[in-house]
Image 1 (cartoon, rainbow, N blue to C red):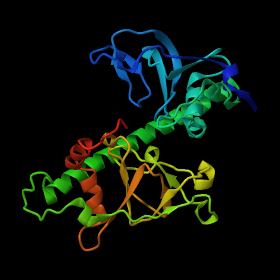
Image 2 (image 1 turned 135 degrees about the vertical axis):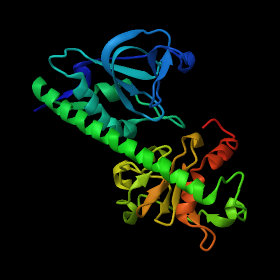
Image 3 (image 1 turned 30 degrees about the vertical axis):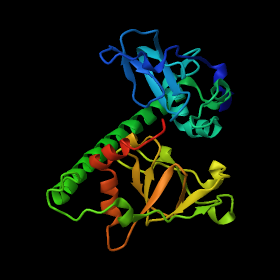
Image 4 (image 1 turned 90 degrees about the vertical axis):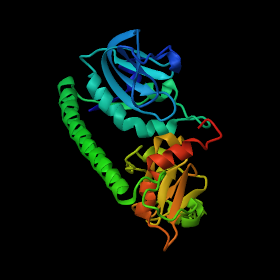
Length: 301
């Protein structure tokens, strides 16, 4: 099977619009760097393509039809559909996104360059094999979406059960004792050098590895694979990970094993005899706490 550069088989351009060009009642998708598209009243493109967010929380989307796009969104079309199948390209880039994240540059908001896409090496089997692979992966994605829907329903049920058992944290209808969060939690995870041998094989979790709302931990790389060179928190099963970046995303998760987490995540422990990790997890993910933290940030992110 030959390996080729993506840029030799695709046409890549970027959108032209500002992110605020969306229209809530628009009839066409408007693709920005967010995972979910917005709406817009007009369109500039009508094609089958792969869309790659050029900055922020990098992600990959597929679309066929009319749409418009933000100026930092890459629009990738096949130069020749008899040589490169667009669905196959989409699945390749969906799995290449980790590499793109490692290539991203910049300060607070990371971004990728056009060359990161054009120079990507993609296996290119015959077209029939590309379509067969894409069909298999389409089925796998459908199963994954159904599983996620089941997890979302489970999460909704658990939250309802929590409220039924303990009541609304704001109104406190059951009259529980009330204490400052700082008296029942602690942040005791030490900051370590991930370059040391004892930490090289530990998984590294940043905000991008925690799903919003449901708090699932996504597959992560080790410190060695991520090439970490700055201090990270050493966490274990006694911690809840709380992402302090863009708190409205509500990214809160239980740690499943000893790991490292970035400075953008608070490793929160429970004070013994005061609360438990499970209770703390639901409290930190509650709508009441989410409303509270959204009133606190003093910077854009």
